Length: 319
Image (tube, rainbow, N blue to C red):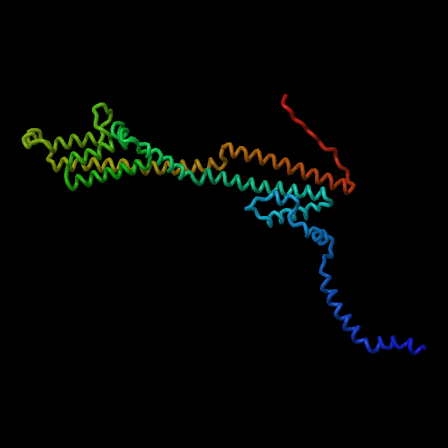
């Protein structure tokens, strides 16, 4: 009877001893592999929020082109700093994250507004000049002083330089040609008129052309210049006009460049309704952030049994 009672014990001790040790050795690594959880208090605080990826406001708070990962990093950073406990404190921390995210959007919008106001100054100026050029009519060219009166427009100035060079080239090759020369001069200076208070190159052309067409008798009698000399003198006047316009072009480019720089600096804080709206929105976000943070701090002090001051409500109304 005692032998039968001892048999199972001896059987376990002898026959299954190796199996038991093998099974124990298999279980030991599994225990080691499973012991990967946080051990410090801070680690446990972080790990208990691992399942909270974005928060309850994420779906409605983010736009399509915004990064959920960046928002999650912001939210988790605030959680780690503020250590909320309970649903209400969690909600307040999420409100702080969303408010901060909106301030990020505000800075992006403000930067875009400044870039729009500064980086496209040259483009806007070119567009305005193109519109002015398109508005120049044949009537205004012919009877209102020609293109030379509108050289403040860079495109018109370039056209005047081209026409003067064309006139110079034609006279150099073919001499005076009243028909073709007068067409160019009318574009530049309009119709010649005795009512003009200032002489133009067109008036000078008429004078030199008349001298060149004098008879030999008149030339000898009055000592007039020869046709070749008349052409040479007028070509000198064309070169003088080209130099004058090129000096104006250089001076104008310098002035316009300085004006563009100053305007760009001024528009770093553009005084536009949109920018004013952004500033009001920024002030609203800052008040909301401060109010939410104050609510969270009051809850945490109450939870910890610390003294809490009474809330201060100030209502300002215009009488």
